[in-house]
Amino acid sequence: MSELKELVITEEDYREYLKQRLRLTDPCMAEEVERVGFPFLFASGSELLRSYILNQTEFSSSLPDKLRVPDRGYAWYMFSQSVREITVDEKRIVVKYELQDDYKLPFRRFYL
Image (cartoon, rainbow, N blue to C red; front, side, top):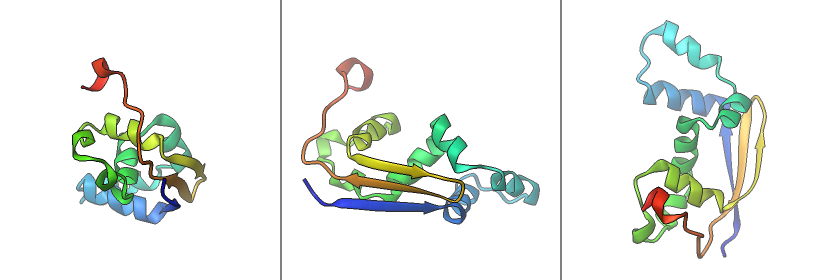
């Protein structure tokens, strides 16, 4: 096992990511992104938030080639085994994780 790593996601960084990812050029649409709250996104299982977290960690590069499947649900399932603690508030999300040497694979019928 490796050391405990910490990812801090600030409200500003995530909103910039959303504006770029969603290609928001209209000021009215960009204002809607300002209303997004971390507790809601996290509790609702936001796919964009999951993608952002996975992209900001070293997780994907740590997986063996045979486990690198483009399906985000599969990657999130694997990453969740590394998570040790998550703290969510209005201004930031802190994810503490530890990359594993071995991961429990999901049921075959769901992902393989």
